[in-house]
Image (cartoon, rainbow, N blue to C red; front, side):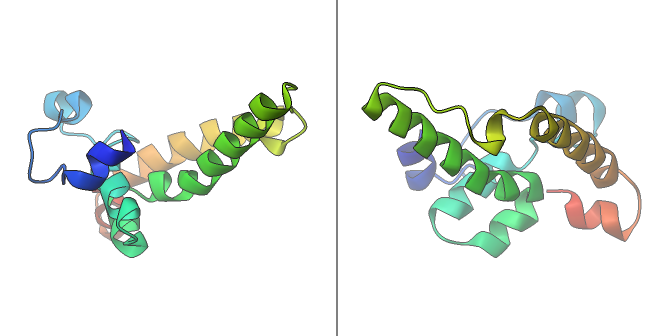
Length: 116
């Protein structure tokens, strides 16, 4: 998938569109993620943040998770000692995602800044 998003710009090709935005006009937490991934793969962090701040902030967490899973797979022992497996982290992600979704749909400058 990374190769596909690296090669093709979702803004210029017919990638799937957000059903939530199409039906309601609201931005879901994932709106802009495809374009953000494309920008991150090309090293354009600022542009990725403009498309989807949540996706840009989640990228380092995903990298850590993939590295931990790879380490567990190579050592034949899963490692579950990371913060990624703590309940507080899971609840933090849920709360931050809900807050992000509400804020990006507010009228005004903050909503406009967080919208894709």
